Image 1 (cartoon, rainbow, N blue to C red):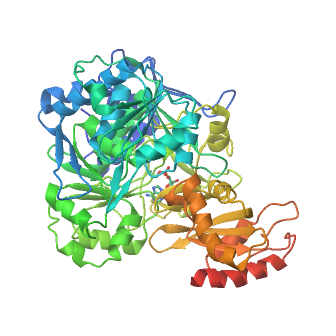
Image 2: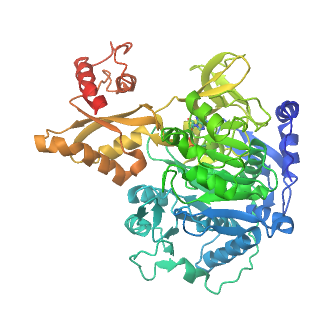
Image 3: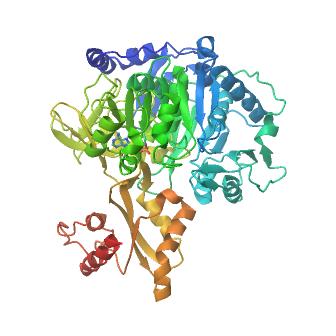
Length: 640
Ligand code: PRX
């Protein structure tokens, strides 16, 4: 069992210990896990030099993460509920799976995968709605040493195909469909379209969920229920190396296609459990609810791995916060007596806008801890969450982290670290943040603002980007020697508390989702009438940032002008998915470019923010006239 930090003094003491002797610190924590063979060294690392980054934790250790969830917890928790599944429709029955039941389902499905010929090291793509089988599928992969690559089931067929091809997955696991409020999404149809472009895929496993009709491809498609029919629930876990890949998760960056962030077995395991237990101060009997989708890293680490390694009871929610009504979150907290609730600022803002009654009508007295993740939380939303949802008695943990970090990095410890609205506060033990200026010079002391980097490895960090190690170095380790670049700007206040300001690169944080501007531009440019486009973020009341696209088109007739915006949105929907659809589209005749042809996004950002009075230095512009035209047009676009 990992011990929890219980006081601020202990936090500071542990922090010091973790910096002075990282190997001793993490080695002691990992002692509580089940190993087939212990490690030779706790950490071996290099952020620079040939082949960098080269980071290994628990070197030569042998283990299986599912044994640390199941066999390790079984004696105490066989009959304890592991997963509570709350369906899309609150009138439908809830499913509760105990650790014993979940274990049997994982082993049986693992045997099913083996029967299908899935082997250790194979990449299995998972494209499922938020149903218990999603957790079962990922854990079954981990059980047999296959690598899961979960793709959020809101991505389009093209986006799914890109990810399946990048990882050369041989199996895709999906369902007939998935629900989102009143909508039913034909997931199998999307998979069929994607897989037509994926030569590596041999089998598609289909879960019956919505019972809608699907196109079944004989020889390729296998029903989930047929695969496990009569299959044994006995399964011996594959013994993995500490550094074997556990999963790939694709995320957007400022350039090119999404990259497959690679997490390995032991370091991720230790980090997910340690952070879950400490940040949320989870105690036996608590009911933890993280509202994220498992298609994102938050769901990987804090719906599945962190809670289940801890032996917690974790909720999986299939629905949306506003259906059947805007009280769904609060009703569900009351229904399941949730003690820790973890969500995104965008959801808080959206629900805040619906009025206080939706919250006040429900009994939220079970709540002990509130959490936020994914984007900066504005002070108004923080105060509303604290006063109305937490009744002023629940600490808020504003947790800063990334797909690449594997787990929470900068955060208060619930009830231990004194909080301030909108501040992520202090680094967890083992996390060594540093702020630098654009030249890479360290900004020492407090009361400074700069680029947030991390100077020492932590067990949950990414190891590579799948299939392209140089890209990993280029993206995260090349800007400043020997530092991991987060891509975020941050402020360290007078007390040493961190406030995350936001991305410093061409990544937009839309409703807590990371969207690369280049990716959206690539999608927009697929429209036959589009010549060029430039995408920036702009402040949005609910989403945090909205997507603003400036688009140059071929000559358009009046009729075409009327439909082009919707067509562009549909094009983005087709190539990426609904989450990346631009909120505002402005058709322009030119873009502000420097003489060397580079788009000056700074200017477009300013115009998008509605702050065109102060555009800074525009002397390098090739054609300054373009800017005036865009400003005029923006007034129209903004009004719309
Ligand atoms: O900009 C930061 C923002 O989300 C980015 C990471 O996005 P992603 O990899 O999708 O992971 C999101 C969930 C872990 C960061 O670079 N971000 C995340 N948490 C916070 C945040 N910004 C401010 N405050 C946070 N608590």
